[in-house]
Image (cartoon, rainbow, N blue to C red; front, side, top):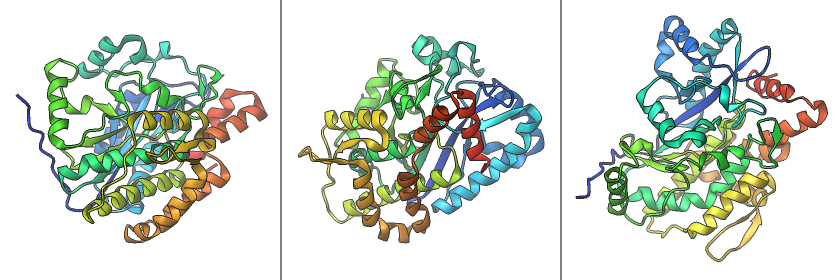
Length: 376
């Protein structure tokens, strides 16, 4: 029997952001398994922000989350307040917050697992691949009013997957080597059995049948164990966009969050107006993901079901113009405009490579990423 999944629709397109950070040692630049000490200190010193600092799979990671926000500016203010509180504690522990999608030289074998049955079970099942997950990302939730909108919007949002990944790519290096990918994180994460690109369902009952099969066969126990790059979040009434690499600073984060907010609201309004939202075949979406992960802002991406192609930055330029009215409605005109600044100045993966070319030192790459968060 298929188990119904209730979608707790959001009456307005609210916004929520989850920002993952690695913890790095101030002296060596290597990953530091000190999350438990940071959580203990935060609980004691800044209890007001405690619910906005979360544990993750490994003890080298913390996640900072917002509450339910109305626009990008509110979300950034929420994150900033928590960041300020947490960074008031990290010096005492001799650690820094590191916001990129991967660490350039850390070894997976020295990382410790966060205590908890859920995490232990994940590693028991996934073994070597699970232990490799030294990756950090940004997740953005946008409120959707009704369940029947979710899958059409999700399917059409996949057309913009390469745009979001190219802008946020920050994981070019892995285990002491340049991978020649802009986002190695995207390639790594999809190795987990329930991660990667979502299946494209036409109706909510099809999604319910899929989840029932997953639970019946023991693939998942809970819905949140479906770790797709874009997924429904029924209990929150949102679509959760998990495409992006970790972001190294608030300015670029605000740009990508504003772009996601505008894209989802634009698709929602077009659906409300009776439009059939454009979709692309799964194999085209998959190719776009690979192209963006490999080439970043230099990717030539597939735009539509007719296989039209274009440089992703050229398409972004036109997209920003088209989304301007939405941005005005969502109070994020300035933030959306910063997308163009990422294109002109270069994304994080490009900056990291430039530092390494100049210094030949991956510790300098870590310092540069840490410095961006601190505004240095």
